[in-house]
Length: 264
Image (cartoon, rainbow, N blue to C red):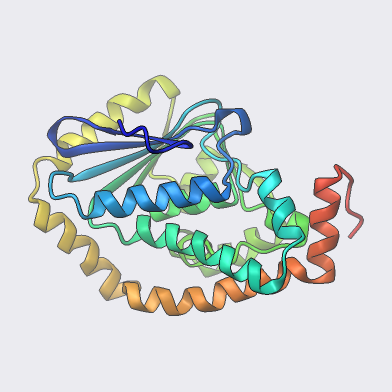
C-alpha cells in the first residue's frame, strides 16, 4: 500500500491483482479534485505495471461514490467557464485512464453510486453490486448534465435509455442497473467476494496479452479508440463548463449548496 495517496488506498496483492479503494467514507466517497488526481495517477501507473493483470475498484464505507463533493461543487459554481473546462478535463482524463486501461477491471459497488460514481462503474469491464445498492444519473436535478461520463454510460445502457435517465435523474435499484447494463451481477453483499474470486480465477487462466488485445479489439470494432475519445472529451468538457456557468446551472448549484429546493 502506498502512503503517497490521501484519498485512496492501493494494495498490490498476489497473482498480479491490484485493489484500488476510494477512501473518503465520511462523504460517501464523493469526488474532489484530489481524489480525481490520485485515481488518475494510480490507474495510469497500474496500466504501465507489467506485474499487474487485474485491477479491482472498491470503496470504503457505506457507499461506492455519491458523485461530486459539495465543496468541490462550490468552487466550480464560482469558477469561470474556462476554469470549469479545465476542471472537467481532469475528470475526463480519469475516465479515460480507467476505460482504456490495459488491465482487466472489476468494480465492487455498495450503497450509493450517483453521477460520476455511475461513470466509474461504466468504465470498468465487470461490475458486481449489492442487492440494496442504488444508482442515479442525478445531474439534471441541479440543472446540470452528465456530460463527461456520457460516452461511457451510453456505451453501457444505449442511446434511448440514456435519453430517459439523463433527463429524469431518477434513482433506481441495483437490479434495474443490471437490466440497463451498468452492472454485471447483483447479489447479497456477503456473496460478492466469492463472485470476485471466481472472476479472478477466470481472468488468471487467460493470457495477459490476450486480455489486453481483447479489450482493444472490442473498442476498435464497436467502440472508440483513445484518440477518438480525446476528441469527444473536447466537446463534453465544453458542454459541462458552459452549463455550469449558465443561469440554470447557477440556479441549481446554488440551491443545492444552500440546501434549498429548486422550483424548475
